[in-house]
Length: 201
Image (cartoon, rainbow, N blue to C red; front, side, top):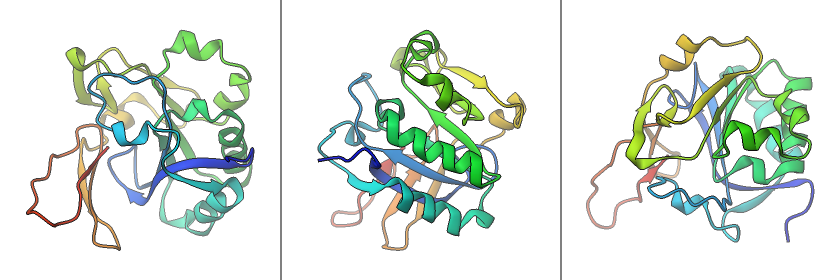
């Protein structure tokens, strides 16, 4: 059972260039009930999957390597469906580091405003990308998967041009040999049978 100080995590990418400006640590949380048709992260939807990581342990990972990146990006899954532990992590990042924070959510901006305690979370976020993925409005640029998504600059630490300049895709060879394709327009990698699984983000 998930404890109040734990997050359900799908994967952590220690260094990424395609999940926001500069080099970033990317975190994909596990669990989403929105079920957008065409979502390219369906493996992050089941709430029973992923691993449970204590907020303190995840923050320690961020703190230890903080000199190697300029910020963290949190996606999913649906981050806003893990309200309390997400807030714990965001507060520590905001209060104890100089790192920037980008969060992706499938909720529309109007829905976000109605969520309990949302002001506290927004106060710890620099850029929020909001809205459900709409396959018929696919954009795959500027950190927006579809054109209906909205970008909210909440702190002034980034400008729209910084978001637009983010590479659309990257291919990363992980330490365990896994090949990971990441970004708003991840590459579909064709691999021989028996090779490592491609993950699209």
